[in-house]
Image (tube, rainbow, N blue to C red):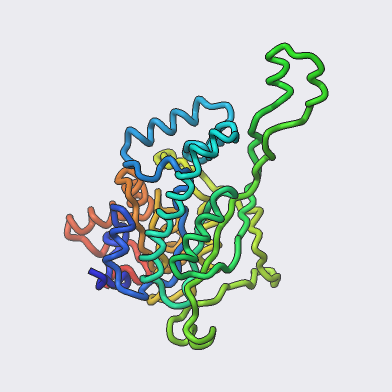
Length: 328
């Protein structure tokens, strides 16, 4: 345990299937240059097995709902419900358990990160504070919150006027335009960092990390708001319900991971592998962890790992695709 060096892994071994809280324990200390990930942030998931039946149930629930956002997995109180005192009492313990759950993987993540390593974790506006607090408890310190502004928002929430009209109540015009929430057009990315060793230059010289690449191609300075990012083409075989645009993940990887065979970017909640694919296309070594075997198989297909398995089995390794730092 605690001796696996991600740099030494072959490509087909760079996607581990299992619970990241256990898998992280196998990694060598200070072996990860950055972590860019999209952990689950619906509290009902915590403590439950992510099997195929449960995922299908949640997807079906979202499809038949008029209020739930279609591109995030269905959760308990976070995804719906009236925010009254009964709702709060029911969900408060889940909120605290979620924060503790983030702390458990945050502790191991802190250990395997290099000093100065940056961690970027997608989350919702209602859960980002819990993730940040949990990671600070684990040893990281808060750096920023990047706003990923989507190309469009989804109107949602409780339409008071429509409900009153349905009930046949008079004077509904008074409540025209009143809803229970605003249209959400952005997603939070919590950014924390492992403390530097002495200062930026010492950390940079020793570990090759610690800074942000903030210069854009047009000469402007990158802000903490990412917008105007195309979604790209969808893949029919990719059934994952929270797939991020590849262009977005390539932007984040290029901002936070200096290109080097010694710098491995980690995604402990790899899903269908978009972070890993972004790193692969940028020529940066990666390591992914995914608890759901169906999603892991999708990631393997996107990364060309199935082709690698076939090439090795057929005794024709010369057909393997090139991959930065992957093959020893």
